[in-house]
Image (cartoon, rainbow, N blue to C red; front, side):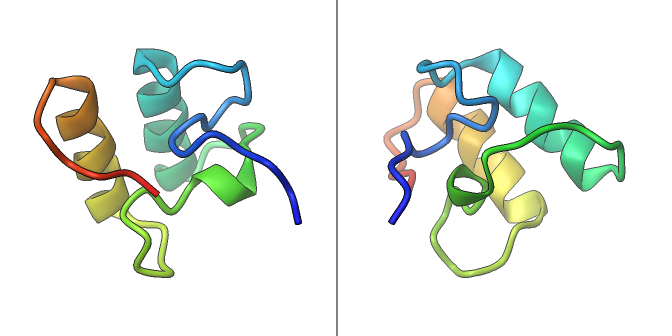
Length: 67
């Protein structure tokens, strides 16, 4: 079992706009290093634009849960 911070896509210990950018680049097909365990932001089992939107809303101060 790997330990991770939900939403910490780049594994730097913070969830911030760098993670949002990294997730966007990952979903856009760029080859970027990601923490696979932290990608499914909404916990539905898929990594897609719904996760990007959830992370954006979280970082914008909305009361949304990230997994």
